[in-house]
Amino acid sequence: MNNEKVSSFKQSYNITLDIAGKSANIVKRSFLFFIFAYVFQGLAFTLFFPLLNNIFSKEFNLNETLFYLVIIAIFSIVSFIFRWLGSQFQYSKDIIEITHNLRVKLGEKIKTMPLQSLYKYRTGELNSILAQNVDDSILHMGIVSGMFFEVAIIPIVIIIATFFIDVSLAFALLIAFPLAIPIYTWSRKKTKWDKTQGANAHATLEADIIEYIQGLPVLRAVNQVGKNANNLQKSIINLREIQKKGVYGSTFPMIIMNTLIEFIFLFVLTLGSLYIANAQLSIGTLIALLIILGRLSEPLANFLAVTGVLDIMEASFKHIQKLLEVKDFSIKQPIKEPSKFDIEFENVSFAYEGTKQKALENLSIKIQDKSLTAIVGPSGSGKTTITKLIMRYANPQEGNIKIGNVDIRNMKQTTLMSYISVVFQEVYLFDDTILNNIRMGRANASEKEVLKASKAAFCHEFISRLPKGYDTKVGEIGGSLSGGERQRISIARAILKDAPIVILDEPTSALDTQSEVAVQNALDALIKDKTVIVIAHRLSTITHADNILVIENAKLKEKGTHQELFEKQGKYYAMFQAQQRVKQWNVKSSNK
Ligand SMILES: Nc1ncnc2c1ncn2[C@@H]1O[C@H](COP(=O)(O)OP(=O)(O)OP(=O)(O)O)[C@@H](O)[C@H]1O
Image (cartoon, rainbow, N blue to C red; front, top):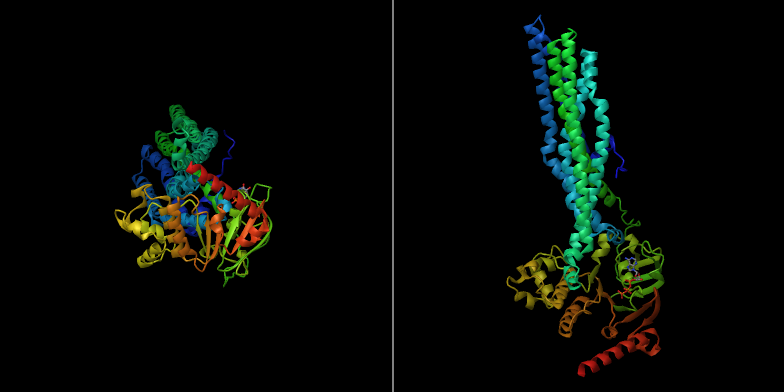
Protein backbone atom coordinates (compact mmCIF):
# COMPACT_ATOMS: atom_id res chain seq x y z
CA MET A 1 0.00 0.00 0.00
CA ASN A 2 2.79 2.44 0.81
CA ASN A 3 4.94 2.04 -2.26
CA GLU A 4 4.08 5.50 -3.62
CA LYS A 5 7.11 7.74 -3.56
CA VAL A 6 6.65 10.77 -1.33
CA SER A 7 7.43 13.81 -3.44
CA SER A 8 9.38 16.71 -2.06
CA PHE A 9 7.95 20.20 -1.71
CA LYS A 10 10.20 21.26 -4.54
CA GLN A 11 8.50 18.74 -6.82
CA SER A 12 5.07 19.91 -5.71
CA TYR A 13 6.15 23.50 -6.32
CA ASN A 14 7.40 22.62 -9.81
CA ILE A 15 4.13 20.85 -10.56
CA THR A 16 2.24 23.94 -9.46
CA LEU A 17 4.29 26.13 -11.79
CA ASP A 18 3.82 23.62 -14.57
CA ILE A 19 0.06 23.82 -14.17
CA ALA A 20 0.18 27.60 -14.12
CA GLY A 21 1.98 27.61 -17.48
CA LYS A 22 2.20 31.16 -18.78
CA SER A 23 0.89 32.51 -15.48
CA ALA A 24 3.81 30.98 -13.56
CA ASN A 25 5.15 34.47 -12.80
CA ILE A 26 1.90 35.47 -11.09
CA VAL A 27 2.16 32.34 -8.96
CA LYS A 28 5.83 32.95 -8.15
CA ARG A 29 5.08 36.54 -7.16
CA SER A 30 2.24 35.43 -4.95
CA PHE A 31 4.43 32.78 -3.32
CA LEU A 32 7.14 35.35 -2.70
CA PHE A 33 4.62 37.64 -0.97
CA PHE A 34 3.55 34.75 1.25
CA ILE A 35 7.18 33.97 2.14
CA PHE A 36 7.75 37.61 3.19
CA ALA A 37 4.46 37.64 5.09
CA TYR A 38 5.32 34.60 7.18
CA VAL A 39 8.96 35.61 7.74
CA PHE A 40 7.67 38.85 9.32
CA GLN A 41 5.05 36.98 11.30
CA GLY A 42 7.69 34.55 12.60
CA LEU A 43 9.92 37.46 13.59
CA ALA A 44 7.02 39.20 15.36
CA PHE A 45 6.38 36.07 17.40
CA THR A 46 10.03 35.64 18.27
CA LEU A 47 10.06 39.16 19.72
CA PHE A 48 7.66 37.88 22.40
CA PHE A 49 10.71 36.44 24.19
CA PRO A 50 12.42 39.76 24.91
CA LEU A 51 9.04 41.50 25.36
CA LEU A 52 7.72 39.13 28.02
CA ASN A 53 11.13 38.79 29.62
CA ASN A 54 11.15 42.53 30.05
CA ILE A 55 7.58 42.69 31.38
CA PHE A 56 8.21 40.00 34.00
CA SER A 57 11.68 41.14 34.88
CA LYS A 58 12.33 42.87 38.19
CA GLU A 59 13.88 45.79 36.30
CA PHE A 60 10.78 46.51 34.21
CA ASN A 61 11.50 49.14 31.58
CA LEU A 62 8.49 50.79 29.98
CA ASN A 63 10.45 52.26 27.05
CA GLU A 64 11.92 48.88 26.17
CA THR A 65 8.47 47.26 26.43
CA LEU A 66 6.98 49.91 24.17
CA PHE A 67 9.86 49.50 21.73
CA TYR A 68 9.19 45.76 21.39
CA LEU A 69 5.45 46.32 21.13
CA VAL A 70 5.93 48.86 18.31
CA ILE A 71 8.31 46.55 16.44
CA ILE A 72 5.90 43.60 16.85
CA ALA A 73 3.04 45.81 15.62
CA ILE A 74 5.08 46.99 12.59
CA PHE A 75 6.10 43.42 11.69
CA SER A 76 2.49 42.28 12.04
CA ILE A 77 1.25 45.08 9.76
CA VAL A 78 3.95 44.32 7.17
CA SER A 79 3.04 40.64 7.39
CA PHE A 80 -0.62 41.51 6.88
CA ILE A 81 0.18 43.62 3.80
CA PHE A 82 2.23 40.84 2.21
CA ARG A 83 -0.42 38.26 3.04
CA TRP A 84 -3.05 40.44 1.46
CA LEU A 85 -0.91 40.88 -1.69
CA GLY A 86 -0.32 37.12 -1.84
CA SER A 87 -3.99 36.35 -1.36
CA GLN A 88 -4.91 38.64 -4.21
CA PHE A 89 -3.82 35.86 -6.49
CA GLN A 90 -5.77 33.30 -4.51
CA TYR A 91 -9.00 35.24 -4.80
CA SER A 92 -8.37 36.97 -8.10
CA LYS A 93 -9.51 35.94 -11.54
CA ASP A 94 -5.99 34.69 -12.35
CA ILE A 95 -6.57 31.34 -10.78
CA ILE A 96 -9.89 31.01 -12.61
CA GLU A 97 -8.12 31.98 -15.84
CA ILE A 98 -5.41 29.35 -15.27
CA THR A 99 -8.08 26.71 -14.61
CA HIS A 100 -9.99 27.75 -17.71
CA ASN A 101 -6.86 27.77 -19.88
CA LEU A 102 -5.87 24.30 -18.77
CA ARG A 103 -9.36 23.01 -19.55
CA VAL A 104 -9.21 24.61 -23.00
CA LYS A 105 -5.74 23.11 -23.55
CA LEU A 106 -7.04 19.65 -22.67
CA GLY A 107 -10.07 20.20 -24.91
CA GLU A 108 -7.73 21.08 -27.78
CA LYS A 109 -5.69 17.99 -27.05
CA ILE A 110 -8.76 15.77 -27.21
CA LYS A 111 -9.79 17.47 -30.43
CA THR A 112 -6.51 16.90 -32.22
CA MET A 113 -4.90 13.84 -30.65
CA PRO A 114 -4.77 10.66 -32.74
CA LEU A 115 -8.08 8.84 -32.36
CA GLN A 116 -6.18 5.64 -31.65
CA SER A 117 -4.77 7.27 -28.49
CA LEU A 118 -8.11 8.86 -27.62
CA TYR A 119 -9.98 5.56 -27.74
CA LYS A 120 -7.64 4.15 -25.10
CA TYR A 121 -9.46 6.40 -22.65
CA ARG A 122 -12.91 5.55 -21.44
CA THR A 123 -15.45 8.39 -21.70
CA GLY A 124 -15.75 8.59 -17.92
CA GLU A 125 -12.00 8.89 -17.47
CA LEU A 126 -11.84 11.90 -19.79
CA ASN A 127 -14.84 13.37 -18.03
CA SER A 128 -13.08 12.97 -14.70
CA ILE A 129 -9.89 14.64 -15.99
CA LEU A 130 -11.64 17.63 -17.54
CA ALA A 131 -14.23 18.20 -14.84
CA GLN A 132 -12.64 17.03 -11.59
CA ASN A 133 -8.87 16.81 -11.97
CA VAL A 134 -8.51 20.30 -13.45
CA ASP A 135 -10.25 21.85 -10.47
CA ASP A 136 -8.43 19.63 -8.00
CA SER A 137 -5.04 20.50 -9.38
CA ILE A 138 -5.46 24.24 -9.73
CA LEU A 139 -8.17 25.63 -7.52
CA HIS A 140 -6.35 24.08 -4.56
CA MET A 141 -3.28 26.04 -5.51
CA GLY A 142 -4.83 29.10 -3.89
CA ILE A 143 -5.42 27.31 -0.59
CA VAL A 144 -2.04 25.65 -0.70
CA SER A 145 -0.03 28.73 -1.53
CA GLY A 146 -1.27 30.50 1.61
CA MET A 147 -1.34 27.62 4.06
CA PHE A 148 1.77 25.87 2.85
CA PHE A 149 4.05 28.82 3.42
CA GLU A 150 2.46 29.50 6.77
CA VAL A 151 3.09 26.00 8.06
CA ALA A 152 6.55 25.74 6.55
CA ILE A 153 8.02 29.18 7.21
CA ILE A 154 6.76 30.37 10.60
CA PRO A 155 8.35 27.51 12.61
CA ILE A 156 11.65 27.82 10.74
CA VAL A 157 11.85 31.59 11.26
CA ILE A 158 10.93 31.34 14.94
CA ILE A 159 13.55 28.70 15.61
CA ILE A 160 16.33 30.45 13.68
CA ALA A 161 15.51 33.81 15.31
CA THR A 162 15.39 32.20 18.77
CA PHE A 163 18.96 30.98 18.28
CA PHE A 164 20.03 34.62 18.22
CA ILE A 165 18.15 35.33 21.46
CA ASP A 166 18.78 32.19 23.52
CA VAL A 167 20.38 29.00 22.21
CA SER A 168 18.93 26.72 24.91
CA LEU A 169 15.44 28.06 24.18
CA ALA A 170 15.92 27.35 20.49
CA PHE A 171 16.86 23.76 21.35
CA ALA A 172 13.77 23.51 23.52
CA LEU A 173 11.66 24.49 20.51
CA LEU A 174 13.43 21.95 18.34
CA ILE A 175 12.38 18.98 20.46
CA ALA A 176 9.18 18.58 18.48
CA PHE A 177 10.94 17.95 15.20
CA PRO A 178 12.69 14.56 15.66
CA LEU A 179 9.26 13.16 16.51
CA ALA A 180 7.19 15.19 14.08
CA ILE A 181 9.26 14.37 10.98
CA PRO A 182 8.76 10.56 11.06
CA ILE A 183 5.04 11.11 11.74
CA TYR A 184 4.91 13.44 8.78
CA THR A 185 6.66 10.99 6.41
CA TRP A 186 4.49 8.13 7.59
CA SER A 187 1.33 10.20 7.20
CA ARG A 188 2.35 11.51 3.80
CA LYS A 189 2.82 8.00 2.46
CA LYS A 190 -0.63 7.06 3.67
CA THR A 191 -2.38 10.13 2.30
CA LYS A 192 -0.52 9.95 -0.96
CA TRP A 193 -1.67 6.38 -1.49
CA ASP A 194 -5.19 7.38 -0.51
CA LYS A 195 -5.36 10.40 -2.84
CA THR A 196 -3.77 8.64 -5.83
CA GLN A 197 -5.83 5.48 -5.49
CA GLY A 198 -8.91 7.53 -4.62
CA ALA A 199 -8.54 9.61 -7.80
CA ASN A 200 -8.08 6.45 -9.89
CA ALA A 201 -11.05 4.74 -8.25
CA HIS A 202 -13.23 7.80 -8.88
CA ALA A 203 -12.23 7.92 -12.56
CA THR A 204 -12.99 4.22 -13.00
CA LEU A 205 -16.32 4.56 -11.22
CA GLU A 206 -17.31 7.52 -13.41
CA ALA A 207 -16.41 5.54 -16.53
CA ASP A 208 -18.40 2.52 -15.30
CA ILE A 209 -21.44 4.65 -14.42
CA ILE A 210 -21.48 6.25 -17.88
CA GLU A 211 -21.13 2.88 -19.59
CA TYR A 212 -23.78 1.36 -17.32
CA ILE A 213 -26.29 4.11 -18.08
CA GLN A 214 -25.57 4.05 -21.80
CA GLY A 215 -25.86 0.28 -21.88
CA LEU A 216 -28.83 0.02 -19.54
CA PRO A 217 -31.31 -1.14 -22.20
CA VAL A 218 -28.97 -3.98 -23.18
CA LEU A 219 -28.15 -4.83 -19.54
CA ARG A 220 -31.86 -4.98 -18.71
CA ALA A 221 -32.47 -7.29 -21.63
CA VAL A 222 -29.83 -9.75 -20.37
CA ASN A 223 -30.73 -9.28 -16.71
CA GLN A 224 -27.41 -7.73 -15.74
CA VAL A 225 -28.83 -4.75 -13.88
CA GLY A 226 -28.53 -4.24 -10.12
CA LYS A 227 -26.23 -6.69 -8.41
CA ASN A 228 -25.47 -8.38 -11.71
CA ALA A 229 -23.81 -5.26 -13.15
CA ASN A 230 -20.45 -6.63 -12.12
CA ASN A 231 -18.09 -3.92 -13.27
CA LEU A 232 -20.07 -1.15 -11.64
CA GLN A 233 -20.48 -3.14 -8.43
CA LYS A 234 -16.75 -3.80 -8.29
CA SER A 235 -15.90 -0.12 -8.79
CA ILE A 236 -18.34 0.98 -6.10
CA ILE A 237 -16.91 -1.53 -3.62
CA ASN A 238 -13.35 -0.66 -4.59
CA LEU A 239 -14.00 3.04 -3.92
CA ARG A 240 -15.58 2.23 -0.56
CA GLU A 241 -12.53 0.16 0.49
CA ILE A 242 -10.07 2.87 -0.60
CA GLN A 243 -12.08 5.55 1.18
CA LYS A 244 -12.19 3.44 4.34
CA LYS A 245 -8.42 2.98 4.31
CA GLY A 246 -7.98 6.65 3.38
CA VAL A 247 -10.04 7.92 6.32
CA TYR A 248 -8.01 5.78 8.70
CA GLY A 249 -4.74 6.70 6.98
CA SER A 250 -5.26 10.44 7.21
CA THR A 251 -7.04 10.68 10.59
CA PHE A 252 -4.73 8.46 12.62
CA PRO A 253 -1.50 10.43 11.98
CA MET A 254 -3.33 13.69 12.76
CA ILE A 255 -4.48 12.38 16.14
CA ILE A 256 -0.91 11.27 16.92
CA MET A 257 0.47 14.64 15.84
CA ASN A 258 -1.99 16.54 18.04
CA THR A 259 -1.20 14.27 21.01
CA LEU A 260 2.51 14.82 20.42
CA ILE A 261 1.99 18.58 20.52
CA GLU A 262 0.11 18.31 23.83
CA PHE A 263 2.93 16.23 25.33
CA ILE A 264 5.52 18.74 24.20
CA PHE A 265 3.53 21.44 26.03
CA LEU A 266 3.46 19.39 29.20
CA PHE A 267 7.15 18.58 28.86
CA VAL A 268 8.15 22.23 28.40
CA LEU A 269 5.86 23.29 31.26
CA THR A 270 7.33 20.68 33.63
CA LEU A 271 10.91 21.39 32.62
CA GLY A 272 10.30 25.15 32.74
CA SER A 273 8.81 24.91 36.27
CA LEU A 274 11.87 23.00 37.47
CA TYR A 275 14.18 25.60 35.91
CA ILE A 276 12.18 28.42 37.52
CA ALA A 277 12.38 26.63 40.89
CA ASN A 278 16.16 26.52 40.46
CA ALA A 279 16.16 30.17 39.36
CA GLN A 280 17.60 29.16 35.97
CA LEU A 281 14.65 30.58 33.99
CA SER A 282 12.41 33.59 34.35
CA ILE A 283 8.60 33.30 34.43
CA GLY A 284 8.48 35.68 31.45
CA THR A 285 10.65 33.41 29.33
CA LEU A 286 8.52 30.39 30.16
CA ILE A 287 5.31 32.26 29.29
CA ALA A 288 6.91 33.45 26.05
CA LEU A 289 8.05 29.93 25.30
CA LEU A 290 4.54 28.57 25.85
CA ILE A 291 2.97 31.30 23.69
CA ILE A 292 5.41 30.57 20.90
CA LEU A 293 4.94 26.82 21.26
CA GLY A 294 1.20 27.47 20.93
CA ARG A 295 1.89 29.37 17.72
CA LEU A 296 4.15 26.54 16.48
CA SER A 297 1.67 23.81 17.29
CA GLU A 298 -0.94 25.15 14.88
CA PRO A 299 1.26 24.89 11.78
CA LEU A 300 2.49 21.48 12.90
CA ALA A 301 -1.09 20.23 13.19
CA ASN A 302 -2.05 21.86 9.85
CA PHE A 303 1.00 20.51 8.14
CA LEU A 304 -0.57 17.15 7.51
CA ALA A 305 -3.78 18.67 6.18
CA VAL A 306 -1.85 20.90 3.78
CA THR A 307 0.31 18.08 2.48
CA GLY A 308 -2.92 16.10 1.90
CA VAL A 309 -4.00 18.90 -0.44
CA LEU A 310 -0.62 18.67 -2.20
CA ASP A 311 -1.26 14.98 -2.72
CA ILE A 312 -4.69 15.64 -4.25
CA MET A 313 -3.08 18.18 -6.58
CA GLU A 314 -0.37 15.79 -7.54
CA ALA A 315 -2.66 12.81 -8.15
CA SER A 316 -4.90 14.99 -10.34
CA PHE A 317 -1.99 16.53 -12.15
CA LYS A 318 -0.59 13.11 -13.04
CA HIS A 319 -3.78 12.31 -14.94
CA ILE A 320 -3.71 15.69 -16.65
CA GLN A 321 -0.06 15.39 -17.57
CA LYS A 322 -0.54 11.91 -19.02
CA LEU A 323 -3.22 13.26 -21.32
CA LEU A 324 -1.17 16.33 -22.28
CA GLU A 325 1.84 14.14 -23.05
CA VAL A 326 -0.05 12.14 -25.70
CA LYS A 327 1.84 12.93 -28.87
CA ASP A 328 -0.06 14.81 -31.54
CA PHE A 329 0.39 13.80 -35.13
CA SER A 330 3.39 15.55 -36.54
CA ILE A 331 2.40 17.62 -39.54
CA LYS A 332 4.86 17.26 -42.38
CA GLN A 333 6.11 20.50 -43.86
CA PRO A 334 5.17 22.22 -46.04
CA ILE A 335 1.52 22.24 -45.03
CA LYS A 336 -0.58 21.73 -48.14
CA GLU A 337 -4.21 21.85 -49.15
CA PRO A 338 -5.57 19.75 -52.00
CA SER A 339 -7.51 21.28 -54.87
CA LYS A 340 -9.22 17.99 -55.86
CA PHE A 341 -10.61 15.24 -53.69
CA ASP A 342 -9.63 11.95 -55.21
CA ILE A 343 -8.19 9.54 -52.63
CA GLU A 344 -5.24 7.23 -53.09
CA PHE A 345 -3.71 4.51 -50.91
CA GLU A 346 -0.16 3.61 -51.95
CA ASN A 347 1.06 0.27 -50.53
CA VAL A 348 -0.58 0.91 -47.19
CA SER A 349 0.00 -1.58 -44.38
CA PHE A 350 -1.52 -1.03 -40.98
CA ALA A 351 -1.83 -2.97 -37.73
CA TYR A 352 -3.73 -1.60 -34.72
CA GLU A 353 -1.62 -0.72 -31.68
CA GLY A 354 -0.95 -3.78 -29.58
CA THR A 355 -1.79 -6.24 -32.38
CA LYS A 356 0.54 -8.04 -34.76
CA GLN A 357 -2.16 -8.99 -37.25
CA LYS A 358 -2.32 -6.51 -40.13
CA ALA A 359 -5.75 -4.94 -40.59
CA LEU A 360 -4.58 -3.71 -44.01
CA GLU A 361 -1.74 -5.24 -45.98
CA ASN A 362 0.05 -3.55 -48.84
CA LEU A 363 -3.17 -1.96 -50.00
CA SER A 364 -3.15 0.22 -53.12
CA ILE A 365 -6.47 1.74 -54.16
CA LYS A 366 -7.67 4.79 -56.11
CA ILE A 367 -10.96 6.54 -55.47
CA GLN A 368 -11.82 9.05 -58.18
CA ASP A 369 -12.89 12.61 -57.40
CA LYS A 370 -16.69 13.00 -57.32
CA SER A 371 -17.28 9.29 -57.79
CA LEU A 372 -19.22 6.75 -55.74
CA THR A 373 -17.01 3.97 -54.46
CA ALA A 374 -18.35 1.04 -52.48
CA ILE A 375 -16.15 -0.99 -50.17
CA VAL A 376 -17.42 -4.51 -49.62
CA GLY A 377 -16.05 -7.65 -48.06
CA PRO A 378 -16.55 -10.10 -45.21
CA SER A 379 -16.78 -8.91 -41.62
CA GLY A 380 -13.35 -8.01 -40.20
CA SER A 381 -11.75 -7.75 -43.64
CA GLY A 382 -10.60 -4.14 -43.11
CA LYS A 383 -13.35 -1.95 -44.67
CA THR A 384 -13.81 0.40 -41.70
CA THR A 385 -10.05 0.57 -41.20
CA ILE A 386 -9.72 2.08 -44.69
CA THR A 387 -12.14 4.89 -43.82
CA LYS A 388 -10.51 5.41 -40.41
CA LEU A 389 -7.10 5.86 -42.02
CA ILE A 390 -8.48 8.43 -44.47
CA MET A 391 -9.48 10.43 -41.37
CA ARG A 392 -5.98 9.82 -39.92
CA TYR A 393 -7.17 7.65 -37.05
CA ALA A 394 -3.53 6.61 -36.89
CA ASN A 395 -0.55 6.67 -39.25
CA PRO A 396 -0.10 3.51 -41.31
CA GLN A 397 3.14 1.71 -40.54
CA GLU A 398 3.89 1.58 -44.27
CA GLY A 399 2.71 3.43 -47.36
CA ASN A 400 1.04 6.76 -48.05
CA ILE A 401 -2.50 8.06 -48.16
CA LYS A 402 -3.16 11.02 -50.41
CA ILE A 403 -6.10 13.28 -51.04
CA GLY A 404 -5.89 15.29 -54.28
CA ASN A 405 -2.27 14.10 -54.55
CA VAL A 406 -1.40 15.66 -51.17
CA ASP A 407 -0.18 13.31 -48.44
CA ILE A 408 -2.63 13.60 -45.53
CA ARG A 409 0.40 13.93 -43.23
CA ASN A 410 1.00 17.32 -44.86
CA MET A 411 -2.46 18.51 -43.79
CA LYS A 412 -3.53 19.96 -40.48
CA GLN A 413 -5.87 17.55 -38.69
CA THR A 414 -8.63 20.17 -38.50
CA THR A 415 -8.27 20.93 -42.22
CA LEU A 416 -8.40 17.23 -43.07
CA MET A 417 -11.54 16.78 -41.00
CA SER A 418 -13.15 19.78 -42.68
CA TYR A 419 -12.97 17.84 -45.98
CA ILE A 420 -14.87 14.84 -44.65
CA SER A 421 -18.45 14.14 -43.57
CA VAL A 422 -19.29 10.80 -42.05
CA VAL A 423 -22.72 9.26 -41.68
CA PHE A 424 -22.64 6.29 -39.34
CA GLN A 425 -25.22 3.60 -38.69
CA GLU A 426 -25.46 4.79 -35.08
CA VAL A 427 -26.48 8.44 -34.85
CA TYR A 428 -25.45 10.49 -31.86
CA LEU A 429 -27.80 13.35 -31.03
CA PHE A 430 -26.74 15.81 -28.35
CA ASP A 431 -29.11 16.96 -25.63
CA ASP A 432 -29.73 20.26 -27.34
CA THR A 433 -32.37 21.61 -29.71
CA ILE A 434 -32.90 19.90 -33.04
CA LEU A 435 -31.77 23.14 -34.69
CA ASN A 436 -28.45 23.10 -32.85
CA ASN A 437 -28.01 19.41 -33.52
CA ILE A 438 -28.17 20.09 -37.24
CA ARG A 439 -26.07 23.24 -36.88
CA MET A 440 -23.23 21.10 -35.53
CA GLY A 441 -22.42 20.45 -39.20
CA ARG A 442 -21.33 24.09 -39.50
CA ALA A 443 -21.34 26.16 -36.34
CA ASN A 444 -21.69 29.52 -38.08
CA ALA A 445 -24.61 28.50 -40.32
CA SER A 446 -27.63 30.82 -40.30
CA GLU A 447 -31.06 29.54 -39.35
CA LYS A 448 -32.06 29.79 -43.00
CA GLU A 449 -29.16 27.55 -44.03
CA VAL A 450 -30.03 25.01 -41.34
CA LEU A 451 -33.61 24.88 -42.61
CA LYS A 452 -32.44 24.46 -46.19
CA ALA A 453 -30.22 21.50 -45.19
CA SER A 454 -33.05 20.05 -43.15
CA LYS A 455 -35.44 20.24 -46.10
CA ALA A 456 -32.85 18.67 -48.42
CA ALA A 457 -32.46 15.80 -45.96
CA PHE A 458 -36.26 15.32 -45.78
CA CYS A 459 -36.32 16.26 -42.08
CA HIS A 460 -38.44 19.39 -42.25
CA GLU A 461 -41.79 17.63 -42.20
CA PHE A 462 -41.26 15.48 -39.13
CA ILE A 463 -39.40 18.24 -37.26
CA SER A 464 -42.31 20.66 -37.89
CA ARG A 465 -44.63 18.14 -36.24
CA LEU A 466 -42.57 18.14 -33.01
CA PRO A 467 -44.05 20.15 -30.06
CA LYS A 468 -41.59 23.05 -30.41
CA GLY A 469 -40.44 22.34 -33.94
CA TYR A 470 -36.75 23.06 -34.41
CA ASP A 471 -36.52 24.33 -30.83
CA THR A 472 -37.54 20.95 -29.42
CA LYS A 473 -34.82 19.57 -27.19
CA VAL A 474 -33.72 16.06 -28.04
CA GLY A 475 -33.89 15.14 -24.34
CA GLU A 476 -37.54 16.28 -24.12
CA ILE A 477 -38.72 13.86 -26.76
CA GLY A 478 -36.53 11.06 -25.43
CA GLY A 479 -36.32 8.11 -27.75
CA SER A 480 -39.40 9.08 -29.73
CA LEU A 481 -37.43 9.83 -32.91
CA SER A 482 -37.28 6.80 -35.16
CA GLY A 483 -34.00 5.40 -36.41
CA GLY A 484 -34.70 6.81 -39.87
CA GLU A 485 -35.51 10.27 -38.48
CA ARG A 486 -32.33 10.35 -36.42
CA GLN A 487 -30.40 9.26 -39.47
CA ARG A 488 -31.92 12.05 -41.57
CA ILE A 489 -30.92 14.61 -38.92
CA SER A 490 -27.35 13.36 -39.17
CA ILE A 491 -27.56 13.63 -42.97
CA ALA A 492 -28.85 17.21 -42.64
CA ARG A 493 -25.76 17.94 -40.52
CA ALA A 494 -23.54 16.53 -43.26
CA ILE A 495 -25.40 18.48 -45.98
CA LEU A 496 -24.82 21.65 -43.96
CA LYS A 497 -21.14 20.85 -43.59
CA ASP A 498 -20.92 20.41 -47.36
CA ALA A 499 -17.59 18.57 -47.19
CA PRO A 500 -16.20 17.34 -50.52
CA ILE A 501 -15.70 13.77 -49.22
CA VAL A 502 -18.59 11.77 -47.76
CA ILE A 503 -18.12 8.49 -45.96
CA LEU A 504 -21.24 6.41 -45.44
CA ASP A 505 -20.82 3.59 -42.94
CA GLU A 506 -23.86 1.39 -43.58
CA PRO A 507 -26.27 4.20 -42.75
CA THR A 508 -29.39 2.35 -43.90
CA SER A 509 -28.62 -1.19 -42.79
CA ALA A 510 -30.63 -1.03 -39.55
CA LEU A 511 -33.71 0.63 -41.06
CA ASP A 512 -37.04 -0.77 -42.25
CA THR A 513 -37.85 -0.46 -45.94
CA GLN A 514 -39.96 2.69 -45.58
CA SER A 515 -37.33 4.54 -43.53
CA GLU A 516 -34.65 3.30 -45.87
CA VAL A 517 -36.34 4.92 -48.85
CA ALA A 518 -36.61 8.25 -46.99
CA VAL A 519 -32.98 8.08 -45.84
CA GLN A 520 -31.84 7.05 -49.31
CA ASN A 521 -33.54 10.16 -50.75
CA ALA A 522 -31.75 12.30 -48.15
CA LEU A 523 -28.45 10.62 -48.99
CA ASP A 524 -28.93 11.34 -52.69
CA ALA A 525 -29.07 15.04 -51.81
CA LEU A 526 -25.93 14.73 -49.70
CA ILE A 527 -23.68 12.85 -52.10
CA LYS A 528 -24.33 14.87 -55.24
CA ASP A 529 -20.99 15.99 -56.71
CA LYS A 530 -19.01 14.53 -53.83
CA THR A 531 -16.32 11.90 -53.51
CA VAL A 532 -18.38 9.22 -51.81
CA ILE A 533 -17.23 6.07 -50.07
CA VAL A 534 -19.90 3.62 -48.95
CA ILE A 535 -19.22 0.68 -46.70
CA ALA A 536 -21.90 -1.83 -47.56
CA HIS A 537 -22.86 -5.30 -46.46
CA ARG A 538 -26.00 -5.52 -48.60
CA LEU A 539 -24.54 -5.59 -52.07
CA SER A 540 -27.91 -4.88 -53.72
CA THR A 541 -27.66 -1.30 -52.41
CA ILE A 542 -24.43 -0.48 -54.25
CA THR A 543 -24.89 -2.03 -57.69
CA HIS A 544 -24.94 1.48 -59.20
CA ALA A 545 -21.51 2.43 -57.71
CA ASP A 546 -18.85 3.75 -60.09
CA ASN A 547 -16.33 1.44 -58.52
CA ILE A 548 -16.57 -1.46 -56.09
CA LEU A 549 -13.55 -2.48 -54.00
CA VAL A 550 -13.71 -6.01 -52.60
CA ILE A 551 -11.55 -6.37 -49.50
CA GLU A 552 -10.67 -9.73 -48.05
CA ASN A 553 -8.18 -10.54 -45.30
CA ALA A 554 -6.76 -7.00 -45.25
CA LYS A 555 -6.06 -7.03 -49.00
CA LEU A 556 -7.72 -5.78 -52.15
CA LYS A 557 -9.23 -8.86 -53.73
CA GLU A 558 -11.17 -7.38 -56.68
CA LYS A 559 -12.22 -4.03 -58.09
CA GLY A 560 -14.58 -2.87 -60.82
CA THR A 561 -18.21 -2.01 -61.51
CA HIS A 562 -21.02 -4.33 -60.51
CA GLN A 563 -21.27 -5.53 -64.10
CA GLU A 564 -17.53 -6.18 -64.42
CA LEU A 565 -17.31 -8.02 -61.10
CA PHE A 566 -20.45 -9.97 -61.81
CA GLU A 567 -19.06 -11.17 -65.10
CA LYS A 568 -15.75 -12.04 -63.47
CA GLN A 569 -17.59 -14.53 -61.27
CA GLY A 570 -15.07 -14.17 -58.44
CA LYS A 571 -15.45 -13.20 -54.77
CA TYR A 572 -17.99 -10.41 -55.40
CA TYR A 573 -20.10 -12.67 -57.55
CA ALA A 574 -20.07 -15.38 -54.85
CA MET A 575 -21.05 -12.86 -52.14
CA PHE A 576 -23.80 -11.41 -54.33
CA GLN A 577 -25.23 -14.82 -55.17
CA ALA A 578 -25.14 -15.85 -51.50
CA GLN A 579 -27.07 -12.70 -50.50
CA GLN A 580 -29.62 -13.23 -53.27
CA ARG A 581 -30.21 -16.77 -51.99
CA VAL A 582 -30.77 -15.50 -48.44
CA LYS A 583 -33.20 -12.88 -49.79
CA GLN A 584 -35.18 -15.44 -51.74
CA TRP A 585 -35.21 -17.76 -48.72
CA ASN A 586 -36.52 -14.89 -46.56
CA VAL A 587 -39.26 -14.09 -49.08
CA LYS A 588 -40.25 -17.74 -49.26
CA SER A 589 -40.37 -18.20 -45.50
CA SER A 590 -42.41 -15.00 -45.01
CA ASN A 591 -44.92 -16.20 -47.65
CA LYS A 592 -45.48 -19.48 -45.83
N1 LIG B 1 -9.38 -0.75 -32.34
C1 LIG B 1 -8.94 -1.92 -32.78
N2 LIG B 1 -7.93 -2.56 -32.15
C2 LIG B 1 -7.47 -3.73 -32.59
N3 LIG B 1 -7.95 -4.38 -33.67
C3 LIG B 1 -8.95 -3.81 -34.34
C4 LIG B 1 -9.51 -2.56 -33.93
N4 LIG B 1 -10.50 -2.24 -34.79
C5 LIG B 1 -10.56 -3.25 -35.70
N5 LIG B 1 -9.63 -4.19 -35.43
C6 LIG B 1 -9.38 -5.42 -36.19
O1 LIG B 1 -8.95 -5.06 -37.50
C7 LIG B 1 -9.52 -5.92 -38.47
C8 LIG B 1 -10.31 -5.09 -39.49
O2 LIG B 1 -11.39 -4.46 -38.83
P1 LIG B 1 -12.44 -3.52 -39.59
O3 LIG B 1 -13.28 -2.90 -38.55
O4 LIG B 1 -11.72 -2.65 -40.52
O5 LIG B 1 -13.26 -4.61 -40.40
P2 LIG B 1 -14.60 -4.43 -41.25
O6 LIG B 1 -14.33 -5.04 -42.57
O7 LIG B 1 -15.03 -3.02 -41.25
O8 LIG B 1 -15.59 -5.31 -40.39
P3 LIG B 1 -17.19 -5.18 -40.21
O9 LIG B 1 -17.80 -5.37 -41.55
O10 LIG B 1 -17.52 -6.28 -39.27
O11 LIG B 1 -17.43 -3.83 -39.63
C9 LIG B 1 -10.39 -6.89 -37.72
O12 LIG B 1 -9.65 -8.09 -37.53
C10 LIG B 1 -10.65 -6.22 -36.38
O13 LIG B 1 -10.80 -7.16 -35.36
